[in-house]
Length: 385
Length: 255
Image 1 (cartoon, rainbow over the protein chains, first blue to last red):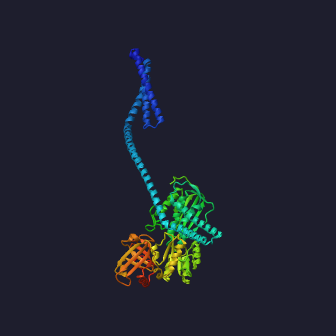
Image 2: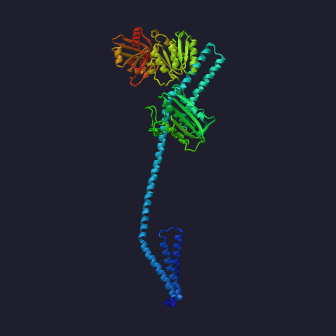
Image 3: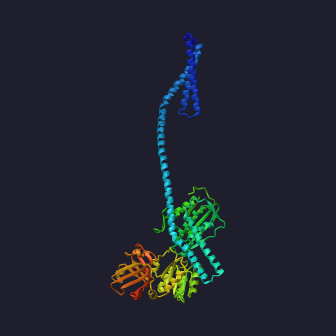
């Protein structure tokens, strides 16, 4: 007997059951399809549990469809079978869920923990960001300080060199003065021939040029050079600018200065004022180092090796002791007497070379003290510092 | 150039590594009647001083192959009466006071004029006896006034040192009247007892040590230009007996 009889075939009651059972069944099936789709798409925790839950819900849905079916047909055995299957699925799911409960609880707790951790991390991140900002501004201040220091080091190096430079300038000035005096006297006596005039004028001009070259060399000290454009410059000229400031000092104090012939036309893309400073610093250090020695020479070698130009300064000293080797490039480290060195020369030179994408190193396996500035033949992009 | 009377017939040595300076100097001194030897460094220069009679040496201070200071020391060790004119370039490794103390009679700073070096050489070729007897030109001068028990007493107190060509005076109240290089001064120094009772005359400040430095007291080095008739012979006699190399001592201990 169809189940409709129980409702006395009252259309209102029958349709209420038809519609509600159909909707419940459809909803159950829809829920399990959605669950299945979800599991396919994302990795949910306990996915097999969810799947079994889905199957159980789907089975529930089918029992409701059977209810509708049996309103008109009396397939109660089929309905019983479907309910049995649903019961099995329900019981299995219930048991399984009970078993899984501690695990689920664990996952929940740890997810709560990780939420707390996330919050803590966020906070830490904020603090870190603040610190980074602070460090950033400290860094700026430090860079500013370093710039000042570099400047004062340069000024003090200039002070140390002042005597040498005065010598280099006053010597040719002395020549010019005496030659000019002589010309005046010859002229006063009416003994000034055109030959003498031409010869003396040429000598005065060339001597004045010597002074000009020294002033040119002083450019390396007149400005920082960091904002100069990178230019292609003959290495010979860079070296000359440095030599003009120190060669008389070498000569006057019997320190032999050997300049190995530089490959003709060899150029370097650089901020030349800075490289002149580096060469001058290396030469001045070498000079100071060999001055107390019996054997006194300094050698400057410039060679191109593939994409690099190596500027090497070797002196007659027997290298630098192992214990101070790691310190020599550090700011303020100096072996010179108090008031004779700031200890900044090498560290600044290293900075300048590195800003050009190169390296400044001490050759530790050479028999004599050897410094090598290795510079890229073509300029590399740098931050301009 | 009638004022350069001493140069004629004298033998000079010019030691200078710059050919372009040494050659015209030699030429000009030769044109004034000097015989001139030339050297490029101190070692060459001393070899000439050792082999020849030289009346006066003009030398650069820094030269490759033997500097001027080493040569000055050797010349003064051999015969400190040979005047040496040192040419410096302003900032020298050797201070002015040290150079005078080592016995140099004059220091000329490059660049200098021909007139300057000629008159300096001419003046040094005169004996101090004649030089110090000349009338002092009238001009504005700073004045130094001192009174001591005796010359050795003043030296022992570190207040005064006498050299062959002038003296060291420790700083006094009158320091601001003598405080600059090449300032012309007059001085009046009295002693109560001893061989020397007065040092009076005119001079030129050749160096100034404005603060105590390197173990030496603040003071000035003054070269005598003229000495008064009352004291000249006594000073000459004391200087002779001192037998000091220092032209202007750098302190009261003039060895």
